[in-house]
Length: 231
Image 1: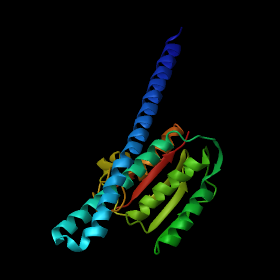
Image 2: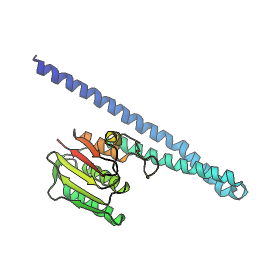
Image 3: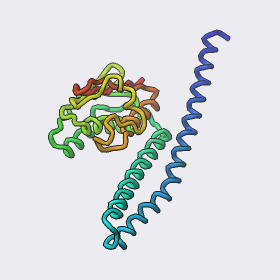
Image 4: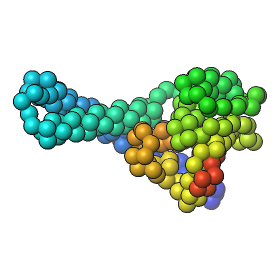
């Protein structure tokens, strides 16, 4: 056995362990998310019943507390949905093939520009990739929606030698925060913007399933660019 063979075997073993650990984590997240739904529905329905049946008899501070409980329960329901989507993405069947990235990006861009006035999204023609089309669309949806959500008005999708890049003129972020934005439930701006901090985590997961990489570059008040590299 050569040193190269030994190194390749160790790498294959490490990848197998990582895949097994990831699968176990996905199963745990899926199970926990489902188990949380029952108690959460009880909390939400209980708060609603109290508001409907006894709202006129409750003091104002009690009404405020019930509303706070309802809002928190709704937020938790959204977090559970985001966690379920994150876990499902890791188990979604992949069918790699030739993908017209430009066409997918243009479709997503049209929907976003129709929904959000004052936003201009340009897509370079001819961007292609060998990838899973549904997962590639998830990547484009999440990156573009994220750019719009954080105030981007001029957004572009362009090809790169390894994949594609999405650039926006939004508020950007500090350079040292570039890796944090792909962590699940990570929100650099706290509750200033809507959402659960899962959009770019979904991007990272979908790209990783292609054995690709994703990174972001930005500067505070200077926009941001997300680079998606697909092998």
